[in-house]
Length: 216
Image 1 (cartoon, rainbow, N blue to C red):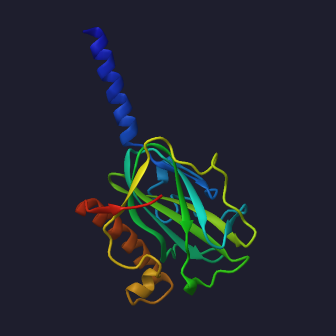
Image 2 (image 1 turned 30 degrees about the horizontal axis):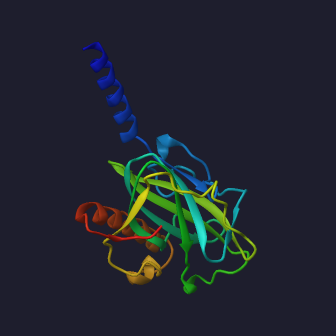
Image 3 (image 1 turned 60 degrees about the vertical axis):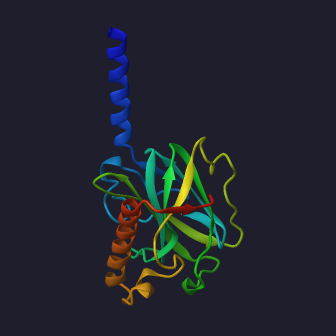
C-alpha cells in the first residue's frame, strides 16, 4: 500500500509539472527567457532587441524549439525592421498542433515577396503557443537575413522521439500580412491586428479540432 501511495504522489507531481511547462526558442537565439512572464505579449517580457543577432537564410530557414507541454498549438510570425516593437503582422507558419515533449525542429520557411527581404535585412521572429491554459506564450529572436547563412546541424534542430504535427484548420493565406488580409493600415493598428489574428487562430485550432496532414 505504501509503495502504491508513493507512486501515485510521484505521478501527480510529474503531471503538475507538465501542466505548467512552457517552451524554449533555441534557434535562432531567443532574446531571453523568463518563465514567469512568458505570457506577456509580444516577446514574453523580453522587450529589448538583442545585440547578438542570428544570421538567417533568405529562404528555407529553420527554427528549433524545446517543448515542455505534451500538446500545443504553434504559430510563427515575423516583423521586419531593426526594432519592430509589436508589429508582428506576417504569418510565416500558420497555426498547427505539435504533440510530444522535447526537441522540435521546423524547417522550410518561405517569406512573401512583399516583404522585400534582402541580404542584411533585420527582422524579429515571434513564436506563439497556447501551452499555458490561461494565455498565449511568446518567444522572440532577432535575426539578420544573409545570403551566406546556413541552417544548424541536426544536433541543434531535431525532433525528439514521438514528436508529431498536424495542420490546424485555419482559413486564409499564411503568406500575406495580416494587415493586407484584413484591410487595415500599418503601424499600431496592424500590430494589434497581428496579435488578434494570432490569438484567433490559436483559439480556432483549439476549438475546431479539425486537422489535416502536416509535414515537418
